[in-house]
Image 1 (spheres, one colour):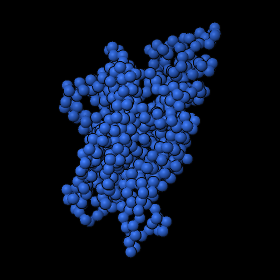
Image 2 (cartoon, rainbow, N blue to C red):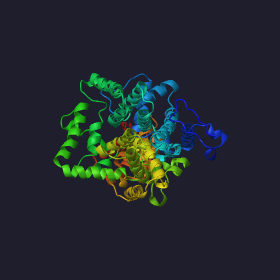
Image 3 (tube, helix red, strand yellow):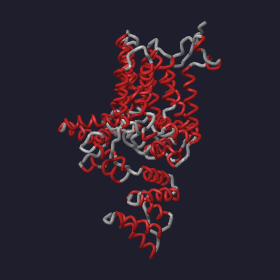
Image 4 (cartoon, helix red, strand yellow):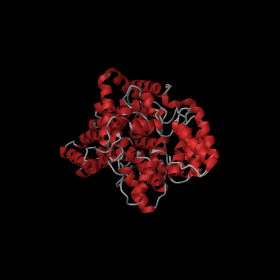
Length: 558
């Protein structure tokens, strides 16, 4: 006897269970997306409870910037002068959380753990919708629930978690049956808010609006209008602040140039510090002083390079596609390979047996097989062709920012839930006898080879543990904790004695603490690596003079 369970407000229920497929009494009353949600939430909670280490205790670089901006907004001071440097929604969310509950890193982390869990449940719903099989839906949801990098980003003060959730929610709404004006409204809102979180998510508008247009084109118009209205709020804010037109934020041009120049490999390895500041200030040296003109300067440089060397530009796109397919996480401000030891949960979910990095070493091949299966099902009518094309188009456009800009682990994270959906389809295709398995298997093997084939990059030469301690020192100095900053910068210098930024800032912090002999020794050691560095010579001379004659030198803040 069959029994049907009805769901309310959750992504797609499960079909009737026959006696042979019946689960335990408790699980039989639990909708599958809720089961996935519970597992995902439990794993993320376990990660937060077990995580400990400098990278977890102190938000670094972009995360530190978001945290300080959230504090500023919570105090009612508003955004800094000028246009948005980065998309504004995530710091606004942080500001709201800090205003409501006080400044604690736990508030955003708890929220993001919930968002990550709902992302897993939504992926379950999407996979169930396009496969018609509850088992495939559960598999997709569990792949997201146990996705180590996504769990890591759910614990970071970065826009990644919120952006990934909004992108997945928009896809789920676009595929939801029955379609209505409310789903169009919600989908447009998710895309607009997503673009205000991670700007390239605006690329999702064409495929998702097209999916909603089936039968009632006005739904696509409504979706696009809501999305545009939200994005234009940022545009209007920027114009009111500066009198210049910036769609969302002023960092798009420099990111475009980083991924489109004569030495992309080297540009991707530029670290926070003197080299980065030199790059950021380059437009000003050529007379471009407003944020919009500086953004346009880098955009012109990137487009000019591509226009003058089209074959090299095309080759660069293929090279970035190869990077996108790599199993290992490419670092940006911190390396997952370094920080994964901060939690046994993260360690277990990002293992690299034999150098094969999980989970992407499995996801990419299975997703390739799933793409073949999805194409077959769309052609045969097993799956609604529009739904199949929507998922395929969404996957391509979520991959596009990595190809147009540059590849890093956190920038490909919004693609991961759709990749898990395709991987679940692929595993089903490879284990089912309902259709020939030769082509999906061949695709999976080919992509597996690309995924695990080693590739040497300039960023591999960066000591990310030294970079981690350098960034921790910067945060502690910003918070007025010079003792903690000295400890962190000493660790950075011990790993990388030639680090000009870490050594110089260590000397300044020692000066502020009145430890002038230690500061002098620090500068002397640094000059052995950088004998022509005028700033270090100047500080050393002032410290020696202060030691001999007093009063203490007046160091500047880093």
